[in-house]
Amino acid sequence: MAEEPAAGLATTVPTVSDEQSALDRERGARGELIVKERAVSRIAVAAALGVPGVVRQSGGLFKLPGRDLPRAEVSMGPESVAVALYIAVAWPCPIAALSREVHHEVGERIETLTGLPMDTLHVVIAAAVPGDGDTPADVDARQLVAEAPDVCRPVPPRAPLARPAAALVTVIVAAGLLVLAGLTGREFLIAKEVIAPAAWLRNSVSWVAGLHWQSWMLPAAAFAALAGLTLIYIAVTPRTRTHLPVGERKASVVWVRPTDVARMCSARAGNVAGIRYVQTTVDRKRATVHVTPTGEVQPRDLEATVRDTVAPGLAMLASPRELRVRIGRVKS
Image 1 (tube, rainbow, N blue to C red):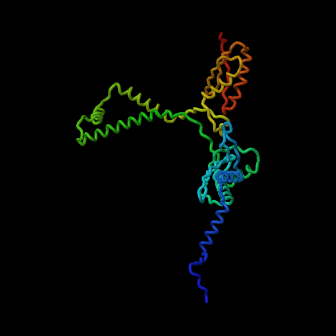
Image 2: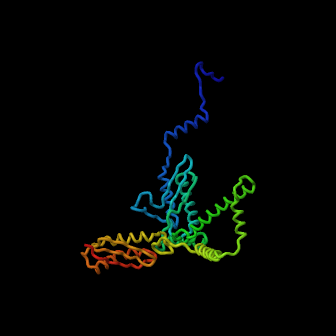
């Protein structure tokens, strides 16, 4: 016979859910794994540098922090991670193929090492630097270019240009068309008897239709022909370049104004001893430095010194200007 439980006593049989809860409490007491955003960022940077064609680039002006490339901005979620990866590539390279390789490598490395699925990964090409030497990255990049010749080709930069000469004429013609549209609407309202003033367009057309040859028509026709030819010339005239390229013309990405070149020449010449005043003018062919000496240095020596000081700055231009140095009179 089975024994009956004593009065006032109760027995409890552990269930599966109770055992699971106890196991969870035991795991919670041990601790949990926390992956910091900084760790994910370093994993992404290391994985990107392992892709042929991705290069390391130091910070920009005065080595500001946060300007190094590759650089990763990470956003952590409870069950996923999002990364914005900024990289520098060795040029030339097939950017589309390279970005796909970076996307695959970085995503796989983060998921493998952190266990967190990748939600989004944005690859941003932040810089392109010329390749130096036959490094393995350069060889692999050239191989990618050969395998995908139509994916990426260097695009020559466009020079900064002035506003089109036809811009003012276009504004005037547009204003005239708007006025004509307003007058046409007014004539429509008059024809529908909505308003009852005098009809300007109808009267003007009737007046022109009743005209006969008069002496003033010949000069007017000549003026109209000249105006038409002038407008055609303005429309087809190419825009003038407003900036000068620095470095090689075909690969230049930095452009400066002639005014900036003149200021650079004046600043360089102003550091020469024995100069009281400097003024520089730059045109399409030459840069002329006008110098007013203090009288402490001979004009010939001063001219040679100024030329040697200013010439290296002009040599940086893709189309160096002829340098002229004008020594003025000594002011007492």
